[in-house]
Image (tube, rainbow, N blue to C red; front, side, top):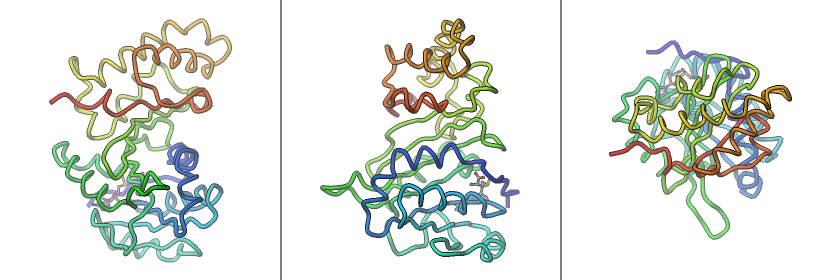
Length: 258
Ligand SMILES: C[S@@+](CC[C@H](N)C(=O)[O-])C[C@H]1O[C@@H](n2cnc3c(N)ncnc32)[C@H](O)[C@@H]1O
């Protein structure tokens, strides 16, 4: 049993990103179900996910799923319209195929070798791709205790799509500060010869080159550095997201070798 560490507002950056990139899918769905998998010792992140998703998709509902039964009992009093808590794990104990599964700070307690199997299992549970939908989204990643530094992988039913780095810019010395929050699939790969290591090295270089922009604020410096990165790395988002202290890159560019 782990401590189940969580905090109010810890996952705000992830929630905000999900609402921005997946809000339209959630809005279009007849029954947009989202799962907060491994919500922890208190149900804050599930409560907040519901609020933030409903701002983008008013019919959204959230199911909090926890493997520790005592955490489900503790969360039950917080059930409300659109929010329930269930005991379970990677099988996801609900009848529907959810449009969103968010697993934050869950896989860090597993072995690196288990990640691809867990991803496959969770992706198989996502709402399928149809003519009018890209299908469900799995967002799996890690952050610090108060949510200033995050890195997550987004996966569709077909597998991994992107990696997002998100940070409070005021507290950042250099982009590679985010290395300690890499998700389990990447954290042991931040070594020479691996793509994620090359990416963070190039990001630090771009950040140094953008130092003159610091006089306009860390946000302008980040935007400039990310713009430079786009010359060599497949960045999939634009200035609107960079302004939030984010950057998203295609998974294939950062995937571990071998
Ligand atoms: C560190 S807490 C994270 C809480 C919250 N997601 C956050 O980021 O603040 C990890 C939680 O995941 C739960 N957990 C671990 N493996 C799980 C699994 N297979 N299914 C559901 N929950 C799991 C643990 O019991 C623990 O409460």
